[in-house]
Image 1 (cartoon, rainbow, N blue to C red):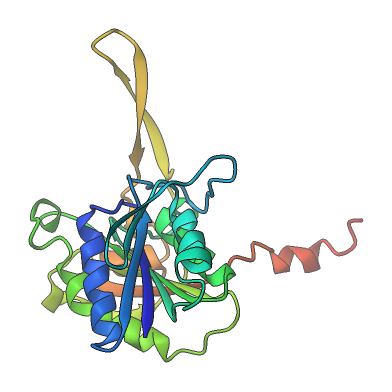
Image 2: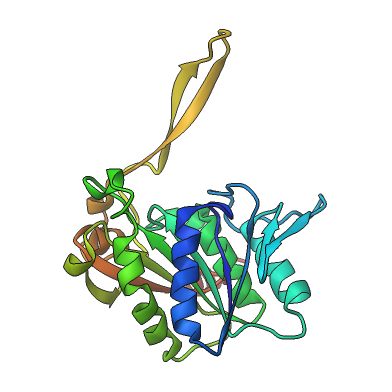
Length: 257
């Protein structure tokens, strides 16, 4: 099996090494793992592409490249240039440093890469690791659940019925590996509170600026949704696709025009 690995945290991110280890285990001794990851952090860029600027590439080692672009750029270049003659069987994106649950999925560069893989006809999975105290302050334990359960979860998904454009969003819970439950299928949730909020600051030179803070109210989603289930300790798996059409609205609004 040949696997393309990417992420949105950057080519030096610790979660990328976890994803590479998962890919190596899934690919097996006769497989190949290729990495094309952003040269610098691209968190929150969603499915953006560098449509109006050049994309610089640097080979860092055998089968490993840094791309001065977005996660979707990495997949496009990886599939259509670097691996154009030997296409991969799977695109793995992650392991993201932090969860991509509920409306996070709309902003996620991790899932933007998986979406691009699906659009280009490849099986694609986004992997993210939910952090919460006390694991969030323990570098050794941060990715423990993803590291321990990632390969088995990916292998299970590879046996699924993959329809065109399907990709998966997998989130590992903020618990030690032995405490993780699941995996379970879960709908993408929606938090009752705002997703992001600006926090005002002032620079040493007196200029105002803002940081965006992220809502952590995952328990506010419906109990069976991805954010609530992952917060309870479950590995959540959400099937997704790039079609934004609201089919219910199409039927409801049929007589509007």
